[in-house]
Every structure is written in C-alpha cells, then in structure tokens.
Length: 188
Image 1 (tube, rainbow, N blue to C red):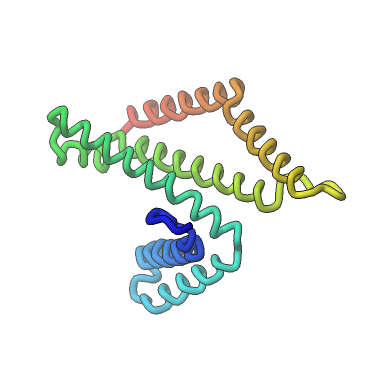
Image 2: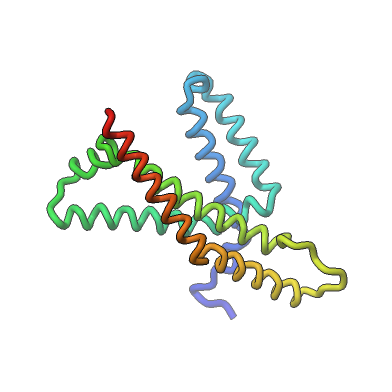
C-alpha cells in the first residue's frame, strides 16, 4: 500500500549522493592545490573518474551513505554550539577569531579531524562487517547465521571501543596531546 511517506523508490537513487559527494570533494581539493589551480579541466576529469570508480565499490557507496547523516549531525551540533555562544553574548567575530586565529585553532582542528575519523572508521567497519564479515564464512552457514554473526561482530566492535582500558588509553592520549600542545605553545 502506498503512503505519502513511502521513500522506497528513493533507495534506487542511493548511488547519486556518493557520486556527487566524491566529485565535489575531490574537485575542490584538487583546485585548492598549487599545481592544479591553472588546470581546472584536468582536475574535473580526475574528480569525475574517481567519482565513477566509487560507484563500482558497493562498500564505498554504502560507507558514504551511512556516514553522511553522522557528518550532518556533527555540523548541526557545531552550529548549535556557536548559536549557544552567541546567545550568551559572544560576538560572531570573536568566535571566528578563536576558531581561526587563536592558540586553540589547532585543538579545534584536531578534534574535528578525530571526530571525522571516528565516524569514517566506524561506518567503514560496520559496512565491511555487513558486506564481507571480518571472519570467513563457515561452510554451510545460512543467511540467518551470517546475520547473527554480523550482529555479534558489531556488538564486539562497540564493546572493544567502550572497554575501560581503551577509554583510559584514549584519555591518556588526549591529556598527552594537550600537554604537548601547551608546552610547545609556551616557547612561541
């Protein structure tokens, strides 16, 4: 039965977003590099070829499609933080200066890079686990057993990430990063 909220037909177009995403990102990165600024046509051709090559990998397409909502949530969360600071009376120019010109710009950049890597690697591992599995399929295993094994692998992944020893290591590494950054900035 068709409903106004039925988006089943949109699932056929799930390759369009990864294609456009790879095309735009690669083209933007290539045109920002010094050796490709004057060669816009070559940059577009390379971006187009990489975008088409992305379509041949179901893992790449699924990873980009699963990663996109998380990246959007990260951006929305960042915008809401900026709006909250503005609601407290801090001017937009001050926020922009802190993010781009102050001693905290590298910390903000590292946090954003870390969050993007976590999102990217987490979705990639989920897609690879779903597509191929990290362990080889046992002989005679049916689809139900494979799905249960895939769910067990995902639970095992998150159990590893949130294990107290891993979280403690992450905390120690963060403290070390901030310590080195503060010690290095004192000498400037």
